[in-house]
View: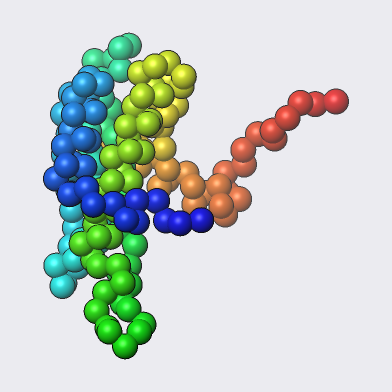
Length: 153
């Protein structure tokens, strides 16, 4: 299986605009797009934060999604240089975020899945940690037991 968006030529700014338009059209109350860089200036994390006001609430929910670009790849042949550049990895990460977010928002606004169910793992607390960051390690370590799936006989 090939990596999604590996060959994308879509500029980062176009993916960011797609995210902006998607959230604005869906009714988000605000958003931020962020990047963190390593010491060489390469993007380490592509981040989307937005505020959502559920119909039954007066308090907006903070939502955070992020993607970490895959490592760039050097050529292994005599020509040297890049097989996949750092810039391509950044384009790939933003493209993946744009399409993933758009599909989640469409599922929520269409009514396939409630907004809260779609984005629950991405709800952010006051310290900037998501519910997923709290719960997934507990599930993996067995400290949080989930109910058994399936019927009883």
